Image (cartoon, rainbow, N blue to C red; front, side):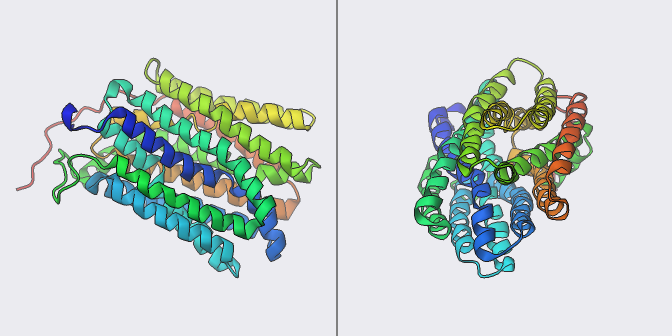
Length: 406
C-alpha cells in the first residue's frame, strides 16, 4: 500500500474516474437505439446486429483481463489513453462498415477492447490503490453512479443525434466525443508507476490467480456476475425493439433507458454506501431477487408507457448496483495489489453472460418472433444468482508465507 502522502487525492481520483466512466458507459448504453436504424438501412437481421454486440461484450470481458494486468503493472494512465483511441476507431468503423464481418470486428472487437481499458476494472483498480478501505466501497459506488449518470445523460443525446444527423453521422460525432477520455486520464497517473520499476508485490500474477480460482467465494461471485451480464445487456439492447414491436414509440424507449440510468445513479450509490455497513453478499442477493420480481411484474402488467417507466425506474435502482459490492468484496478478500486483474476475470464472467443475453435475444426473436423465452430465462437466472451469493465469505483470505523467488 502506498503511503498517504504519495497517494492521489480522493477528489481527483473520483472526479477523473467518474467522468471517464460517464463517457465510456454512457455511449455504450445507447447502442440499443441503433439496432433498428442500422438493420433497416443495411438490410441485416436483428441477429446480425445482436451478434456484433455480443462479440463486443465478450471482447470487453476478454481484453479486460489483460487491461487489468497492464494497469496493475504499469498504472491505469496508459491503458485508459489506449482505450480512448480504440473507442474512437471502433465507433468510426461501426458507422462505415460495409458488411456484417467488418461490423462485428469494429462494433464488436474494437469497441469491446476499448471498453476494457476505460471502465470499471481499470478505474476500480485506481480507487482500490488510492482510497482507504474505510471509504473504498462508497467510492466505488460513486464511480458506478457516474456510469449510470452517463446513461441518463448520453442516451437521450444519442437519440437526438440519430434523429438530427442520421445514424452514421451520429456515430462519427460520438467517435470524436470519446477522445475526451484521453486528457481525463492524466488525472489518474498514479505515484509509483511513473518509473520503469513497478511497485513491489507479495504475490506474482500466477500466485494471485491460483489463490483466487481455488477459493469458492471467488467462483460464486463469478457465477452471480454472469447473471448480471445476461440480464442488463439483454434489457439494454433489446427492450427498445420489444417496446416498438408492441406498438410503443421510439421516444418511450429512449426515456426508458434514460430512466434506468437516472435511477441507477441512486441505486449504485446506495449499494456502495450500504456495502460499508452490512454484508455485501446480502446486498447482492437482494439485488438479484429484486430484478426477478421486477421483470415478472413487468411482464404480467398491461404494457403502457407508464408501466414501462415504472419498470425502468425499479430496474434502474438494481441495474449496476451489483458492481460496487462485488468489486469491494474482491478487494476485501484478496487485497488491492492485483485488484484490476481479478476484477477483470470476474467481469469476464459478466461478459459471457452479456454475450448470451444479447445473442439469445436476437436469435430467439428471429426464430420465434418473440422475446418471451429470454425474459423467462432472465427471471430464473436472477433467483439462481441470489442463491449463489448468499454463501460468499467476505473476510480477508488467510495466507501463509509467500515463497520468495531465488
